[in-house]
Image (tube, rainbow, N blue to C red; front, side, top):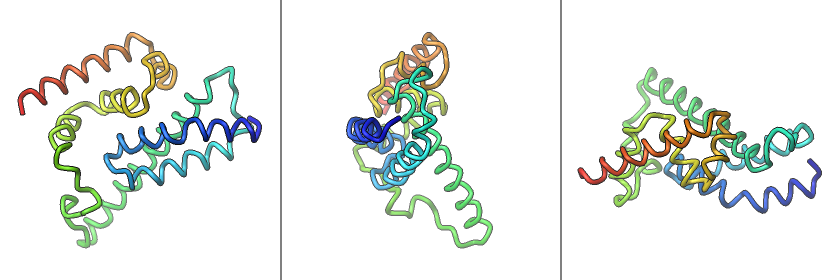
Length: 163
């Protein structure tokens, strides 16, 4: 990928990718680090990008998913270390993790979904990817991804109607 192509990719995808990451993390501030990490990794790996294997959009979202997973592992390790040292507080006391009140029921409903279902909802609505794009990104059959999105939406609807 040439520099001008990378610049166009950044211009086209930075905003939607940030929205996806904010949706996945539940916090716009927490989404900034994986966004920066994603484009840093993409910049370093741009010479290895192969347009025959995936679209640039799919490639950048794959990198973003890896950055999110890395961030989650780091946060988990930090929380375990704090818990062992006795220095950790309750996560609910952290003002950076407090959700907006009107999103509370949605966050609870999302938490009840499996990791795969949450990822499907985040990709579909947070990243605004089509189901075929999601299937390519996740390297899974289209019907599997369609079913996952359908089941997740059904579960969310049922949970939200019960609240």
